[in-house]
Image 1 (cartoon, rainbow, N blue to C red):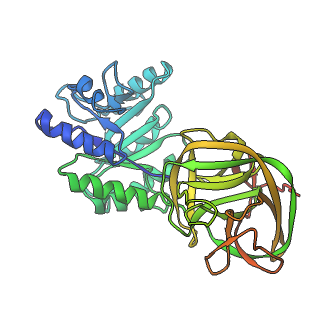
Image 2 (image 1 turned 120 degrees about the vertical axis):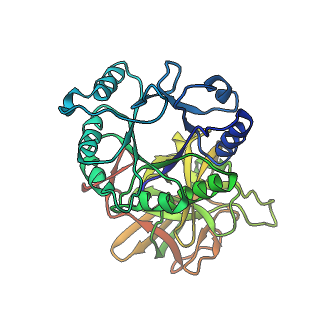
Image 3 (image 1 turned 180 degrees about the vertical axis):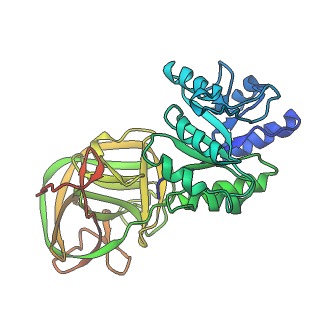
Length: 378
């Protein structure tokens, strides 16, 4: 499942209460707010780096579908192609402004207009009284081929779960008007859990371990604390990567650094969110990486620093069924892979016949994207 997100509607309460709700949302990772009235835009921006969605010129994303009363509505013309909201979306799209439409789905005409707006909007906020009754799956199916993100308006965690899981693909996100702090945190946690990617790890057999000379190797220092049993998927081949353990364990030679994965040489791949890979040499401060555990469950982290140094290397070769795997790591006692029992194993102790955790991708990759193409890596 692709990464999901949440937005909030500007709470229609006193500024003091609104400020607390927005601050809690930012702290929970929600950084987009829809503001119907455009009031307090300046005050909202003072709270942090937040994207404002409204029908004002100073908005980050222009909002279509707002009535003069300041609520979310969308006018229909008998000829959908003459809809004023469709014309407004086209206008701002042609001005290279990100556009979002707010659509209350009450009948088939609204569904059809939503599909037409998908050609000119970056985001569609879909509002319905009951997503278990309204055919959300119809809109999702009709818009799957268009470059637009669908956001369902919800009131509870349960509504959010239904919207995001509809038709397996689900909406890209949800939007809600925060009622209390717990609601914000619960929906934020749900989004985090539903965005989690899982990789099927296999037990490969080590066939060769060979010390090499020096090369430029990369340490990935993240903004997250990793627990024992967590690390990253690293490999010389994009279709076959090994589980490299984090430096979260104590050693007699060096203190633990639980934020770090000593990943491998500069040309190696690392798995990042969205089922993509990056070259280790490309990683910079602020880039996203994927932390994986021994069950193949993942969570997102950010690069705090990428450190490249010349170090002695070690070639690890392994096999899983008919797939041959080769990768390089630093030749040091503190570098660990993970064995078939999920336990860290120092590469200094690694030998032929050992079983280690790997990920085998059935597809090739082009510019880090998984594709159906035959590519030979050796």
